[in-house]
Amino acid sequence: MDPAERDLWLGRVASIKQWSRRGERAPHKPLLLLYALGELRRGTTEIAWRAAAGKLGALLDDFGPPRTTQPSHPFRRLANDDGLWVVTTPSGEDPGDSAGRLAALDATGRLADDFTRALLDDPGLLVTVARLLLEDNWPPSLHDDITAAVGLDLDHVEAELVRGRVDDDDRRRRRDPNFRERVLVAYEYRCAVCGFDGWMDRAAVGLEAAHIRWWSADGPDDVANGICACSLHHVLLDSGVLGIDDEHRVLVSKRFVARTTAGERQVLALAGADLRLPQPGEPAPASEHIAWHADQVFRGPARLAG
Ligand SMILES: [Zn+2]
Image (cartoon, rainbow, N blue to C red; front, side, top):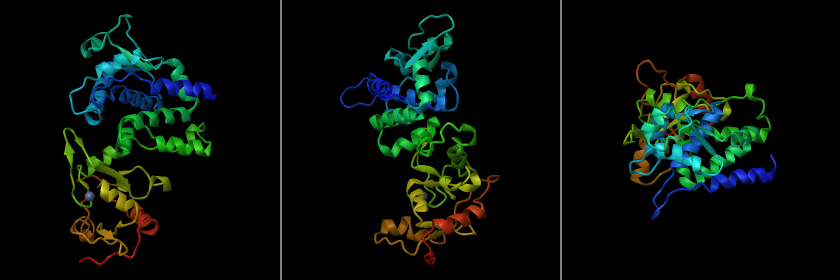
């Protein structure tokens, strides 16, 4: 894509009209666009209001401001911004922005045709648009949660771009957008290491699905290769402070030190503790993945349980 066209689209995205007052957040349109980009990655261009309303409402609840918000507003109003989004109805009537009218008139939204073509022609544009929306509206700590919620695998698209294989669609390994949800449900929304089970409104917070064998090292998106971990224990697993043994006990690297009671309680005291296993019927971490982590990540030797 030539730089002028790229700049045109980025300029339009950057200048989406967002209501704002005294620092209040209004990420409604950005969330809708991110959702539409996720759908586009899955090959869906038409977004029927009736089918998407629930999901859009949940996204706004989870990543929007705490005040009540209507997903029907951005769904209709984004079409007023320059050339990004189109809303149509079979009858040709303008549905306005009430949820009831959008449903009654069977409204459908889609990214504008030129925009869709540009995004499909240049996956780098898609990544840049998504990153721009994320940067402008949320702190980095939430970016992964948001991209997971809309099913956008940005890191993966970027890696493929660097490798120059992005056109080779069939051979590409894709992340399973449901991995996080399947792992969190299997572990009943509880950190397998410490038992943390934070929840706010209708969503788990501070809980993540960790790959035991890293995805980047060909680890599969299987529950048997995942554990639900709080954000702290996820980082410590990935950085080799924590490990798992064959009996599903927690290992703590001898090389890790912490001098405060917080470090003691949250890390050192876990040495030798039993991992909280998934609910009946769901697979515990598989020994082959545990072996990979022990070999490739865990900074042994392990501290003796005390
Ligand atoms: Zn934890």
